[in-house]
Length: 426
Image (tube, rainbow, N blue to C red; front, side, top):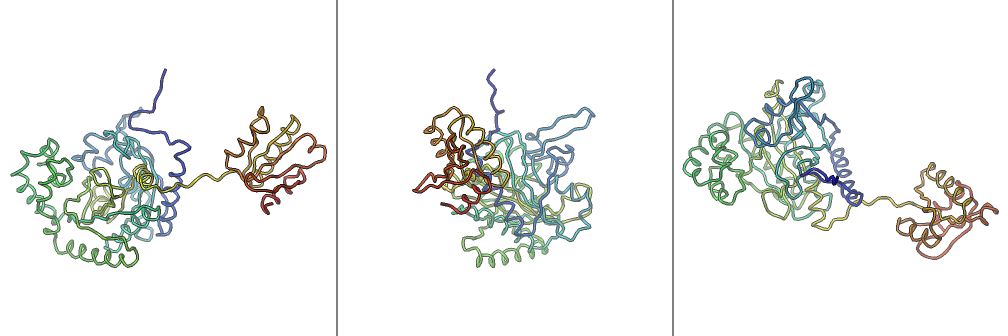
């Protein structure tokens, strides 16, 4: 039998882990810097959560969810996005009683049955943040700043911030009608997906990346021309705040993209994406927006919210492309090289005691020559070798040698003295 990882999934091998440590460590540090606390939600939820929250007319709900019935007859779905579960947790656990906004972040796998793409798999992993309970443009700017701070802290350059406002339940309907009038004249020349979406959700036609559809989206009416007074004021203030952030982040140059609508029905007002130098429909590193009506859709009281999601695989793909180094494993401080059976047993005990004292240490594999053991020590990245032979055992000493450079010294075969010598260096 020849088993392989399921299509659209990938193993994260030891050589890949330095990049995962880099992006996950930076995510936790950046989120903490902005006052966001970690939350974990289940990998599967009630299917209705996504049908009501994400929207039944979205690609996710229509054709990308992994949905199954359990033995109790309930319909459950593997998490296809992170926001709706966090909002469910906010409502279920009474977080409205906490100081608002509630600032949360998560690192979670996401499951979508979709055609595998570069940096996007059927099981991929997201870093996401949500700020729930405050509808002010200041929080929008904070979320955008957090995302920009995160991706730039990793060493990525040449990034573009794209922003738009798509209005709310007051001004969205007139804009939808304007889009239907406009696209009604062109939909016959657009792709099959656009024909299907035309009646149900004309905003999604703006988001189409099909080459034959892009020119129609470019010439379409702009949401910012249809904003009601409150949405217009919110949009103007946000633009002023982002302009102020340019003093702190010189590369942050917001670009208005009127075709930016994101792919989920719950978005309102602010939407944004951070894109790398590589252009293309699947190039976005990080994207999100405001979802002020989502809590009501889930049965809760009106509660504003905003957040973003960042695919970690795509982030790592761009780190490799820009030749950013990952966060490497800490090499062992010392490898014990042994000559003779008694010396090998003593080496194991000594190394165990060093590890118990917080010093990374390994024993060279048995059955190899001294030369072979030294090659193993060199390949491990260790700084020192501790040579123990039968003659050293008789005298109660070992030889501590650096793997690079000159110098060596005898040390008492006592873990405390060896540890002191390692800390002091030769």
